[in-house]
Length: 317
Image (tube, rainbow, N blue to C red; front, side):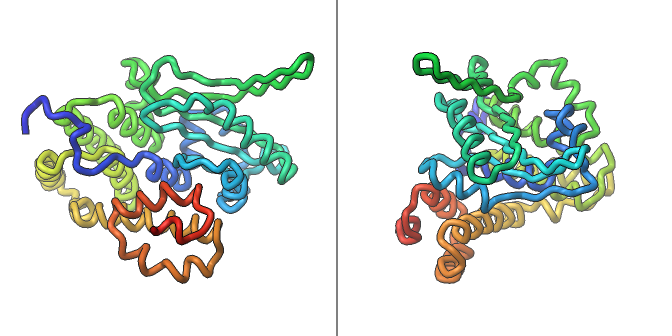
């Protein structure tokens, strides 16, 4: 493998949406503390959080979009005791969506109209276009006007040296997820990307996190940063040597077969959950065995179809 190998030459197409969905659900308080600290400070975390997947799917179903999004609707409680919902929109596509701000507005007002709850819509932009920075949606007809503004974080800003140093110095575990996403999107040379992947995982080990937490974040990083097979093999050998040196026997959780199986299982769970939300438990019962036995590439194709599918059969044709 030559030094000019491109990261985009990987045999596995990068899947950024699924790891973001899992990361948001697993580390939601850490996500807000890192990227939206003022909002994090307003929430009474002792009341817990509720992930409102079924409620959100009802809204998404009406949008009839074929694109996959790493969006999450979360119920929390403010410090004054008011229950509120937080809608997180994550734009991780290679090409930014021109109608993104309008989608933010549409989901926001549909949630308020349907469920009659206060909603805060937050945007995270993980694309690589410096100029794509939607923060508002406006529409007008004569003297009738709509103006909607929303908080937005552009991950590309954290690639600047000063902001990157903040991430590397942060003890917030979600900083590693953000760093992995940035490097996966902006690094074109696969050899360089391999170096970044090793550095991020070494940072996690050096901070002395518990084994279970290391395993979770390690899988997310591997899910986001996919290398060509030859480089991936080199990377795993380097990681194994590093772990032996530090006497940290986590390598068994990072073997290729185990990681790929974990990704496949995660995609299968996501598809089964969406199938249940859209078509009910009978559809899950009929198709469960086929979904759980499917390869990762096939699962991703089915996930691409499910939001626009009118029947379960149109997903699996």
